[in-house]
Length: 112
Image (tube, rainbow, N blue to C red; front, side, top):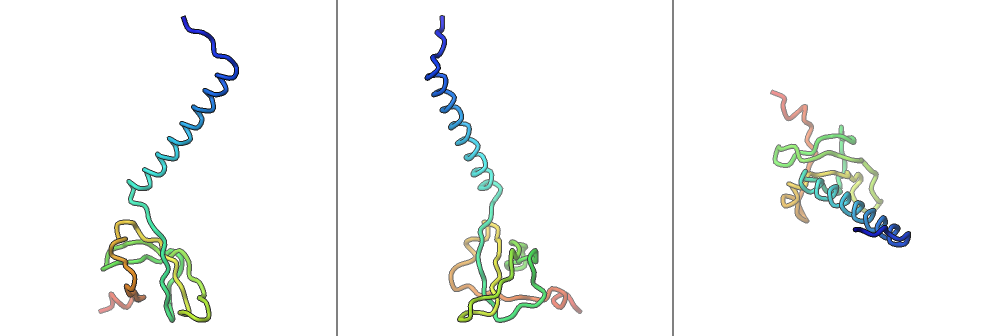
């Protein structure tokens, strides 16, 4: 036969269950983001950008790799414009310190 739980034991059991469920949910979301590939954010500075706005695709070696999240005016001592980029994690090793980037007018790139 089982004994009924005391009030203190019932509260303690409820707290333990809630913490376990919370940690499990956090683990699922974290692991889900990792399995889905996820992304990372970075910044790139330019003297000038034309036709770039939030949502503009970012290509790495011609492959869609992310998007522009924001176009910001930079500090006075740096480049004129800073692009905040959201890049897929699979491209993390392609982007090391010192890598250069350029803005390409896609319409002109495909012109005959």
